[in-house]
Length: 75
Image (cartoon, rainbow, N blue to C red):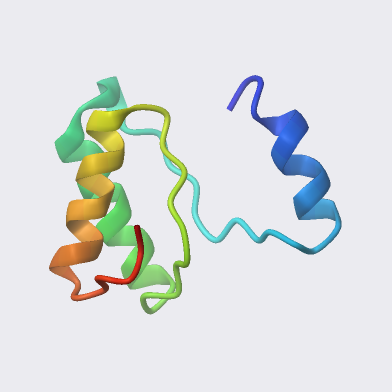
């Protein structure tokens, strides 16, 4: 999250952005990212509108979890 906080923090403080889950994918492995996204979707009852990922592999894995949950409108 180093570096991105300066952009996200003002949006969070202004109430324009709510972070509902935050997870570190151990070793940046896609399988770990997908598990984390599965857990987030369960925790929020699929209440996720967007995903922020640090790289393509973990982002793709998170998106795979979203698609597996039948939430195809999140891109």
